[in-house]
Amino acid sequence: MKVIFEEYSGIIITAVAIIALIAVVGLLLATNGPVHTAFVDLINNLFSKTKVS
Image 1 (spheres, rainbow, N blue to C red):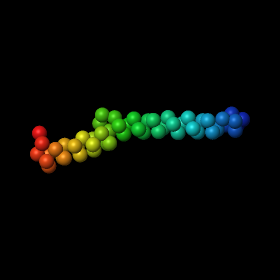
Image 2: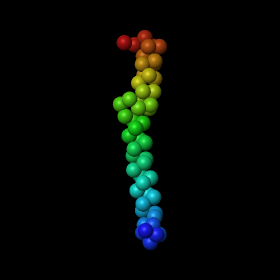
Image 3: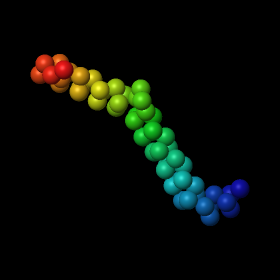
Image 4: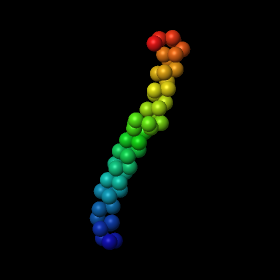
């Protein structure tokens, strides 16, 4: 096991980091995610303040 981590630790860390980044971006941009919700609220507030329907 030690030999595997000595040889492939960089690749393993890179793969885990990429998978984690994809998961975080996917959660943030999901339909009910915080970024999506904030963007929809921003657009709704903009339209309500300018009285555009």
